[in-house]
Structures are given as C-alpha cells and as structure tokens.
Length: 178
Image (cartoon, rainbow, N blue to C red; front, side, top):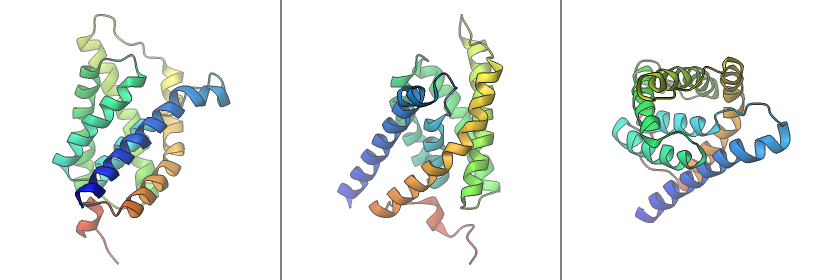
C-alpha cells in the first residue's frame, strides 16, 4: 500500500512536469506566440478537488514548487498566492460540490481568473517591480485553461483508477447521489 501511494504521487509529480513542459516549451512550437493555458493550475485544481484540505495543501505546495522550475516568479510569491487560492477553492468546494467534468471546467475558469487577480495583487503589494496587467494575454489564458482542462481531468481520473488512489474526496459519499 505504501509503495502504491508513493508511485501515485510520483506519477502525479511527473504529470505536473509534463503539463508544465507542454505549456512552456511545446505549446510555442505548435501555436507560435499564442499565450498558453495554465495547465499546471488544472492539475492543482484536480488535487484540491479530489483530496481533503490538510493533505491537499501539502501536495499543492509540492506541485507548485515543481511548477516553479518553469517560471521566473519567486517561490514565496507563488506559495502565498496558492495559499489564498487554495482556501478560496476549498470554501467553494465545501458548499457546492459535484464530481463532473462541467464542474471541473467551471473551477478552472473561475480559478484561472482568481489566480491572475491574486497574483497581480500580491505582486503589487510585495514586489519592487510588479507584474504588468497584460490584459489580452491573461484573458487568453483564462479562456483557454478550461478548454484544455478537460483532457487533463480525464488523464488524472484514469491515473487515479489505474493506481487505485487512496483517500479520494469523492469516495466519501458526502455529496454523491445515485
């Protein structure tokens, strides 16, 4: 059981690395200068939705540290933004939750918007040289992230079924109706 948990989380880290690699390198080879979606945020959203709060927060921090390899943003800023982001999504999840692709797409749409707002506000408050608004680039990411979250959702669901992932939030029968 311990080996399976280790392999599950190692696989999730590898999926995060692949999503970040696709977003930062391969995307530009296919689509040119079109701003890529936040694929790493889709993986983060999946972990937030599929795990309980204490465990999910630990793994979010680890996955964001992995994703920060591909970014010029400081890890402290990302962790601060993700801490606020995490609790916002958890509060929404605890009040309105259903396991479906549509819900995951909605979380990715609202989440990418929230991430950009939180990142911009944190940058203004804490950095000497804050990030620019870049309206069209951020709007493109907000619109593309939900679209590209659908294959990530099915990939991660398949990975959890294959690895028989433990302690999945959806298996608690808290909100399921059949």
